[in-house]
Image 1 (tube, rainbow, N blue to C red):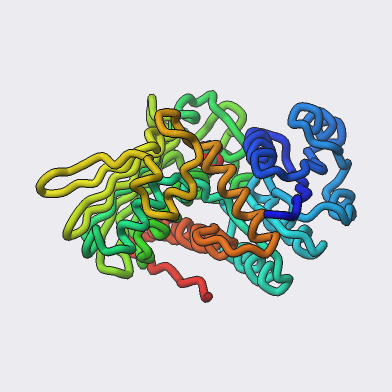
Image 2 (cartoon, rainbow, N blue to C red; image 1 turned 180 degrees about the vertical axis):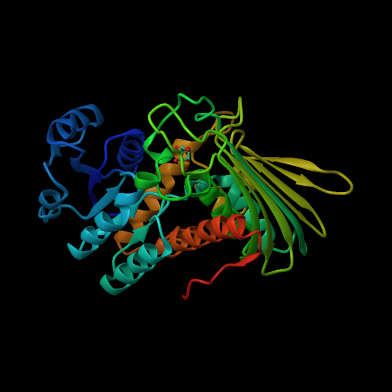
Length: 364
Ligand code: SOE
């Protein structure tokens, strides 16, 4: 990529750290940052090595040298801020969930299309080489007809009643917590790898802590159990929890087809298990033996683990390449963010109603 991208960031928390590291790896200029107050902005700029802290988003948007803004704020702020970025004619990378309702997410898709800007969502697990390898195997027909899909995403950072975060409160995080925050990654990954669409869901949600230190009423769920069907006729289950003791970031995906099964584990991302009735095997991340799309993303030499931060850097690198006018396959765009918001809403609705809920398609 010839053009050096100038990036601005709204939000200086954990995601601010991950995004600035990834932007630096993608050789961007880290031009500006805005945080929740001007003094926090200055501290974040220094800590993250960003050139300038702006007092407000409006000030940063008025800087013509900035090409793209990364929106890394609490979920309820995404829509308003991302719309302002697009209205200013800039490209946008907005954290997931893209918005707290599909009405807002629809508006964002429409605005980005109308403005013709690059608008992406960090479904970064798509950028593990072994996820691309799984996708390539499905596309090549190696897996055969897909029968069952089992996805789980388990964490424990909210296990204690004293654990709190803005995501716990519906006013800042949105009506769904666990599913919007991490289930969204899982459904995106399933559709990305299989090429099939989740067509309908039935679900059961639980809030195990009705109150938490800092919240007298918790309206968002700790865990979700979902049954689903796909456009290709497969059936599947999802288990999502942020209160699973000992599980830190355990995203796992198991796909079983008529010829073989595939199993990916985000905490051990350097291999893919290929299950066969005879002679199952574990495929290592060796570019010489991977499909081209997977080999492209394998950047750390063999024997040295590659993981989350490289996946993030690849996502940011491909977003910037798209901004520079280069085509990139598999880039998660606002349409994919909208898709995950629709599935999240369907999961909540299915749990409340006790009925199957159909998922509305996102038009191309
Ligand atoms: C917290 O649950 C979190 O940081 C998510 O917000 C990220 O999307 C996920 O990648 C890791 O966990």
